[in-house]
Length: 445
Image 1 (cartoon, helix red, strand yellow):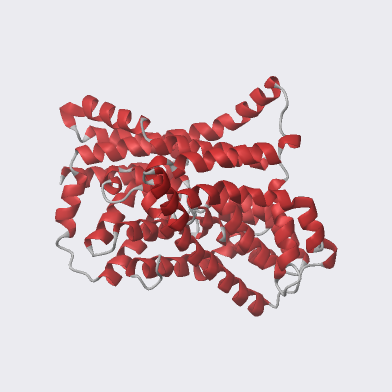
Image 2 (cartoon, rainbow, N blue to C red):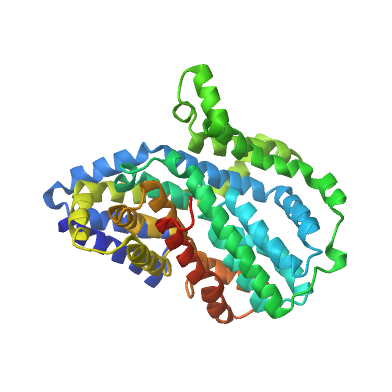
């Protein structure tokens, strides 16, 4: 059981370095990689080098970094504000309109940007003041904003998804393309639940419609920001070309399987970057020197994300070399539990690990184990991947360590501790149950 012990030490190293010593997650995963390598004994140099070399060749490494760059460019343009304005015009007149706007906006931005703290900061900086002007308490406003952060994980194509699907144990069960549509449907289940939770909160706290001074007619907001809707073209077009009736017909016409010919995880970020460059061209640099400064500002984000992904893949490859998949299979073979019980066991484990760690670190640490456990209980591989990602998405709403909690509380000017119970009640526990529902087929994906 050498590999199982290596996995345990890997998780412990990440938790100690990141949560106890308060170092960044990139450093924590490098330390975890080194710790796993130590279990190779005299073969440590060869095993660690091969794990690293394979990680550097992963297609998802490029895709994750491309999404980071797209999000960075998007933040420098008014495109997101225009999208929020349209949502505001649609939902703001409803009772509790600001709460619904914040919830839907988190889903929209999460489907594009994916980073929980960034989703909360970008959406919350606009919607939290709107909510407070509609007599929503600061605690509730922060709860709603932080509770939406996890939608960055439950929609394709987050770095968390790439980390999970790039691990050796999961890649042998399902491909990234296999989970795109199921994960999108899983994200819709999570968004639908959040709208139900918003309805309950609005009724319980007697939230009023948005202040009329903050409302624009839909015609006005569309006239000002209709071009922002083209962001979704970069996602929809590759999906239509590779999936469903359109993808099947096109494949028959050209004589090849379109999902093999067009890589979604390569072309979606490329098209999104191109769209942001076009839509935000008047607000982006025009000279080479200005672009150099912009790239310099993005470098720290590239560094952390890039190191995180490469270190996670490298450690996963080392654990695979040590025989983790086989050892876990032998270990879990002795657990005789029905799928619903295994789903809850795995869900509690993932949610528990996600409390001190980010969703990405959680997937790097125990994602393959969680997926393998569910598959061993009879859950289809793609469904198991979706369920595990939903479990991990609770990191944004898991007190006391979720970064989005502190981002939202800072914007709202409230004590973060006052959001802990509402977050656990309205978001953390229900999302755990949604993941279990997906795993057992009660919520089909």
